Length: 298
Image 1: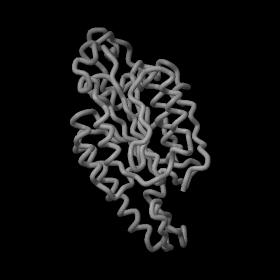
Image 2 (image 1 turned 90 degrees about the vertical axis):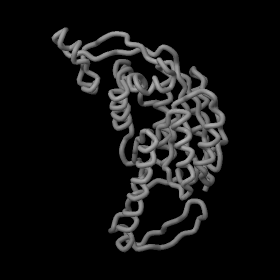
Image 3 (image 1 turned 30 degrees about the vertical axis):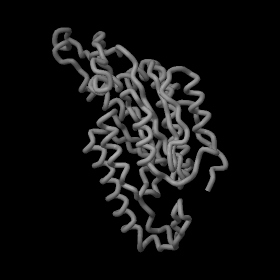
Image 4 (image 1 turned 135 degrees about the vertical axis):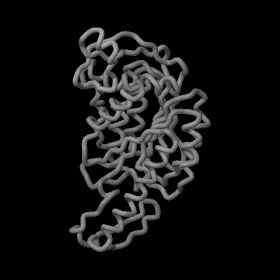
């Protein structure tokens, strides 16, 4: 089913945060161990500053704090910029919603905020949209033009729909990126083709991989009191009537098993996974996720 109208809010919400918060929660997350893996000696100690309640306690330098008699955290500066590439799922399974937003609209808002925030700290960003293959590609660049090009393409209803081939899209990204990058895969990861797992392993070896999984609540559970419902395959359009009370437990157990499998795949490939659901606002869990990574990667 083609997307007729795109209703996502593409004013990046991270833009509304003050500069100090953005620097702490986003740029701090892009330093340390992660950046070293991307570009060797990629970060350099700059200075100390006072600890605030927005900082991860793991970032406290206890030796320096003892000497100065106040809590201090280390500040780093990036020596050179690095590349980030967003691989965004726009297939048919993303055109679903039991909430106020389709999964694809929710995903677009998440990526738009991150895209804007990362550009603000001086890094080059590229992106690719995929369904059966990677069909919109922008190599990593810096500057506002890249951001406006992304928002134009991500909000174009004509770019949505079609079957999903995550494995092929990942293979294409690996082949086109000639520079080690952080590749952020944004998808619901609803696919019966598990060959994408092999390409995640390759991607994690050649680059740095991060998954952002966008799920609708109905991707996980069906309320037992929903009565008779229709389940439809988004690709074949085949549908069946089921009794929610009879099948809700089976449905939930199956989905939890698949979810645990996806988590395990990312963990075994030393890649992080941010899990978001469309019934909860993304900003706080996303910033909290990067804040924790910043504390670990410092």
